[in-house]
Image: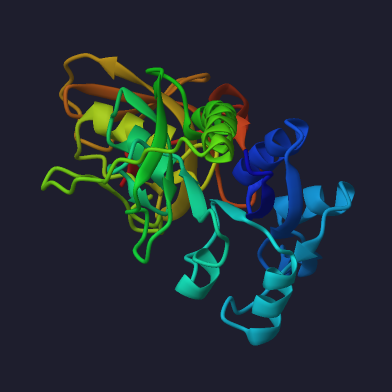
Length: 315
């Protein structure tokens, strides 16, 4: 049985849960690689990645290269003398990095590969109305998320859960799957499965302003899935307009009301406590939202301070 000397690469909160589990299972982490610090927010204060905060707190050896092909970085990485690298939510690695350790480099991806390769797999699984998803470990090759699969674990997506809730459940599932993968590698019993490409494979495209915008002409279920799949981050948005004013509004939570109506698509219907938007065959009831310059609020709280005319519309 070969003793593992691990270099861990990752940046966001999702990766922290995995790194923490690796350490709590008494594996030796000889180094952590994360994104360079960058200024964030209005004051442009330097912000550490979630993984850096964890590494500093636990006195782990930390490298923050801006260029993964930089000679100095490659020498520092080699000097850590790792025999295995683990990648969770990091950037694409050059071949010189992923082929360095003798036991290879494996990635944990938050989907059931080969589906949802790419930047936002957890979001797209909900946006597309999937009823199950999971995590997969695979050895890295020179393309994105295409390498030979080691293990995958599956969970059901609950009909009302949002991407934040699913993210946390997948982080726990991912931690267990990484530890199981480490046990196989340590014992030398890894068998891999090659990913098969088919025309039906779905992609987890990078999220941007355009694909986060709500199209109210779509079926209610698709609209609700988009809202769930983008909440609490980056959040689905649309325009509200009333009395010649227009606002860019974020919608965090909603539910579908199926009923016949004669209102135009996008009509805004409000009582003192409820807000509904007319869609095909029913309404989307907005449960929490954020107007520009205001904090996120529940709908009753928001409607306490504002009224809309009968001509108000959403698009």
